Image (cartoon, helix red, strand yellow):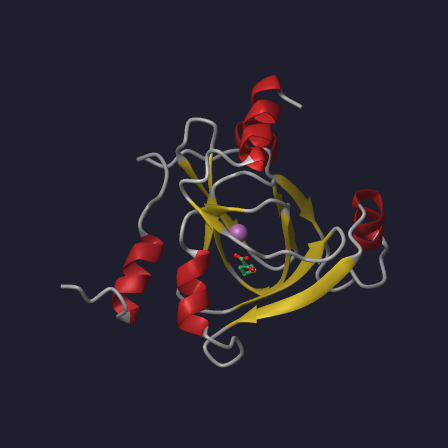
Amino acid sequence: RPADDLDCRQDYINKLQTGANPPKFLTLDELYKVSGVEYFKLNVDTYSTDGVLDRIKQQRGYTYEDEITCSKECLPNYEEKLKNFFQEHLHTDEEIRFVVDGSGYFDVRDKNDQWVRIEVVPGDMIVIPSGIYHRFTLDIKNYVKAKRFFIGEPVWLPYNRPADDMDCRKQYLKKLETGD
Ligand code: KMT
Ligand code: NI
């Protein structure tokens, strides 16, 4: 030790159970109640023409869109970026991801500060609220392709925990407490 950069070590950490033992499964309504995370199911074969994604973008004001591929081959600075994604952090804006290929895990802290692991597969669109502590990791396939959305000019800056004094954190906690 330390051998934290070895692939087998990373795979081991990624597969570690993050939540309750034995696992407890949440419905999407429950997920929303305990974290404020929103979820949309899209059809990965028809989303570009079926209008569902367009309606969400329009309703929520998503004016920016790009695509990120996380794999050793496609992501510049792969090791460092993945390490940063997996550091517990928050953002001043929503983190919106629509997975079109591959898979991975978003871990978010619930209102009792316990991890909730959200597996994302093609067709899954999640909205992680601003001010929530979270992290992302790939699974054993080491590959995900996702569309990213943003209201206005994108800001990807993470604030690693602790960031409890930030306005977005306080607002997030207030909203969670009052239930919207
Ligand atoms: C992020 O910000 O954590 C990511 O973009 C992760 C890859 S998208 C599923
Ligand atoms: Ni993030």
